[in-house]
Amino acid sequence: MTTPEAALPVEPAEVALLRAKAGLCARCRHGEVLRSKRSAFLRCARADGDERFPRYPGLPVVACRGFE
Image (cartoon, rainbow, N blue to C red):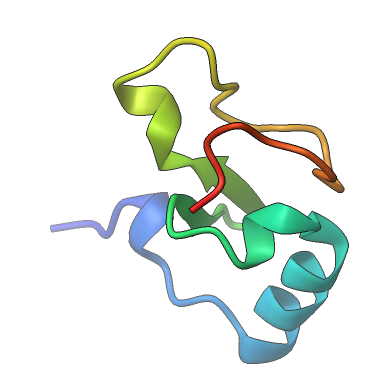
């Protein structure tokens, strides 16, 4: 059985760098870090149920109505 790319472990330094560039998403409860074989992405889980939010927002996010 293969591991989905989203479930690959993410290196702590890589996550720290992504979160430093993320703005509000770094502290939001809806922000999720996903990793492919070559990079990491920040995904907004709020987009799953509300299409007003982009699934992969442009970073850094400096204002967001969905921030929690």
